[in-house]
Structures are given as C-alpha cells and as structure tokens.
Length: 182
Image 1: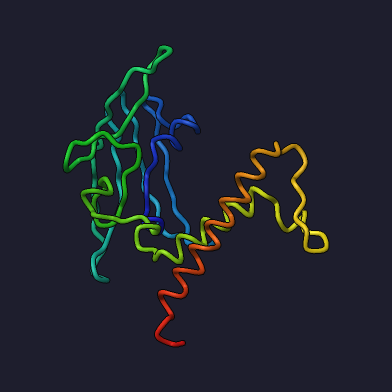
Image 2: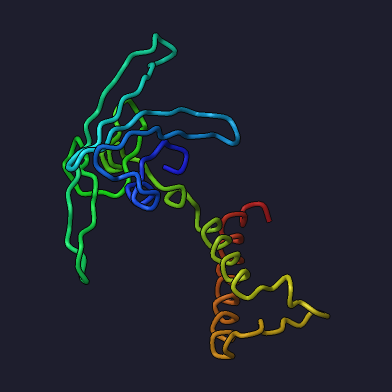
C-alpha cells in the first residue's frame, strides 16, 4: 500500500483543492523521479479525473473517472468530505491507483507493509519507537541512561519497563527463529 499511487482527501482539503469549479494536476514521484500525474476537476459533489494509462507496455489509452463525495457532520458544526469508493461505495479518505481505476484499499486487497512483518520485525520497530521517545542516543553517558529533560519520572520508568519487555520478546523471537542453527 505504501508504494501505490494514492489520492488522500485530507491532503486535498489542507491545500484548498476541494473547492468547486477548480482544476489542477496531481503528481507522484518515486525517489526524485516523476512517476505519473493526472488532471482533476472539482465539482460540488464529485471529482473528475482525466489521465492516460497503459497495460503491460501497450499503447497509452485515455481514461476518465468520476469519484463521488459524501459528507458527515462534525461534532462542533460544519461537515467533513469523504470519497465514495467507485466499486464498493464505501466511505473512505484515501483511494489507491493500483490498476486503471482509483479504488479503496479493500477493493484492491492492498495490505499495509506492517501486515507482512514477522514478530521479530514488529518488535524491532517497537524498540526503535521506544528508543526515540527516550532519546537514548543523546542521554547515554558511561552506560547510564539519563531521563530526558521535561519527561515525568513515571513516564520514564514505564518506557524503560516497556523497553525491557520488548528486548526480552526480541530475544525470545530471535531464539525461536534461529534455534535450529545453534
């Protein structure tokens, strides 16, 4: 999912691109190289996409897609716009361009990268997250970890306990994975 072209309604809203009767271009990059672009036209209740695509290295073909909006009321007034998935009609914030059409991730059956991680990968990611909160690289002096300035002692001790638990789980997962080599 992280490597698929996407249109995020929150991104469009933040940049004022959801205003009716506006036109523009959405573009994607891969690294620093352009990876595609599409033209859009906004209306009150829909967004029209115009783009070109090709399948399996064939000829370029023109395509147009209409994406409908829906709105939900916000707790303190106003409303929030959402996309309606063109295939399943589900309310979503992000549509993905894994094929010719932009659809929700469920219609394309796109998994998040974390869904393919092993227990060891997940625990390593969790340990990195805790380390960042503890700012460990800045506070490691003579083998002693100092509490980051401004952090409550209770939070610090909770994070240290979590770090210890994750470290033990990493050790156990590592041993389970590579036990046959020992």
